[in-house]
Image 1: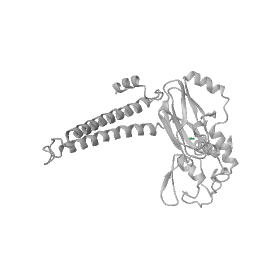
Image 2: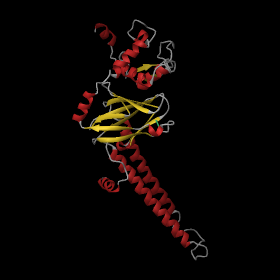
Image 3: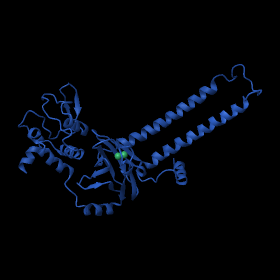
Image 4: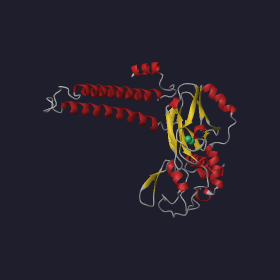
Length: 324
Ligand code: CUA
């Protein structure tokens, strides 16, 4: 696909490429564009040709079947079908590559709210409307919204993912070029939607380390989550095995648990979030639906912190905590 990359350099129709997958997105976009223009040209030429050949009063033959049968139509339709199927596979593979992401990427929490982006780094550093990242490292964004649907859009990274209230969306990227890039909200979200802008600052590793040490960051998400776990009373039921009314949460993340309805479910971030906001939806087998809903009582940011804390719990955590 090198010839496509060359073409990009001279065309200047796309924003600069600052992420690992940007080039692949552009190749697909350009190939689709070229193919569509070619098709359009063929169609226009045929329309003009037939328009002239069969104009009113022209001698072009109008009776009898086409001597070549249906083959022109069949060929045209088949070629279109196969080539667009090719584009579908190409696009599908790229999409899955971008949106599956690696398992071990560092997670950055992002909450959209009217009208700003709140960013929380794993070490507790917080930013508003800016996101600093080092070059060459893969990050996973855990996106959510506190009010309405927003969309986290960084054209230079070829990254766009909705932040939807009530769920977590995930996006991955590896920035490849230092610089400052536009961050936009790409979903109309109210009066000041157009002002919901920010920037992504991609730095060299050394500059990033400098920046991090200058931040005087707050507590880590899991540490804040632990405080919330206690202050909201979760610890009263979910800590240790002394109380048998509720499932013990230590080491539960990433495991499957049986539900009262008979099926099993994987404990992931979405399940933990659901269990906090709609606890009676998926009751674990053997327990009564006695947990109150925390919907409306905790913010998106708090929810992300509690989830980070529950993720961090290892089997036997409570015994460890008691001895500390
Ligand atoms: Cu947030 Cu538009």
